[in-house]
Length: 251
Image (cartoon, rainbow, N blue to C red; front, top):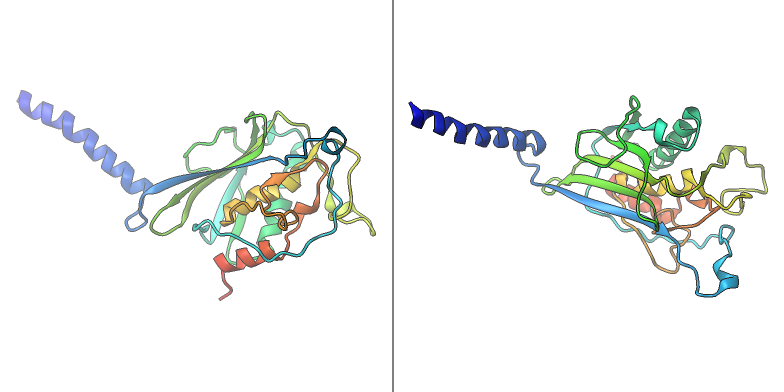
């Protein structure tokens, strides 16, 4: 009788682990892997007079460069926002997030981004939530995106994006700009980072695009560094669109 009890104690955890694995990694999907992206402050030349310049109104340099990560989103994904952690009113936060997703959904009809209920979670962890929240990150990091995906199929299992609460965040609504002002040439009178500009880049990692750091890639939304006052990453350039369409080709 004692032997049977001991066997049960050994077998029960094994069965539990097997069930957990089946839930986390469906048959044929492969192992679950994690990739973390960190968007950092754009380094400036080592000269005081140049170091304080804010380069937000450069003329666009066309670039078709794009780099895919190897994963892709399912046809429909629900995201949840921790509005309590954001430095804006709830309505403003929801608009910023919605605008950022819309920028990418306009590039492909293959993925539908669905807003879910709010969440109190503000740390990245695998819990079957796809969250956007503000929390403290390292001093040079503007935002970080955590992607859990299955290695065989390349399907995304979960995504969490954390914006760094250490920094001052502002938002310029691109829909309020009046010509000749556009997101490409307008510099808000602020020394803060624009939330939609940075978040739109982070959503690009959800879609399946990698960071770019080439000298001719600074105007692409997937350029790996962020600048104060910059708004131009609110919209996609040709390389961002081509990369998205490569991952999600039209039927």
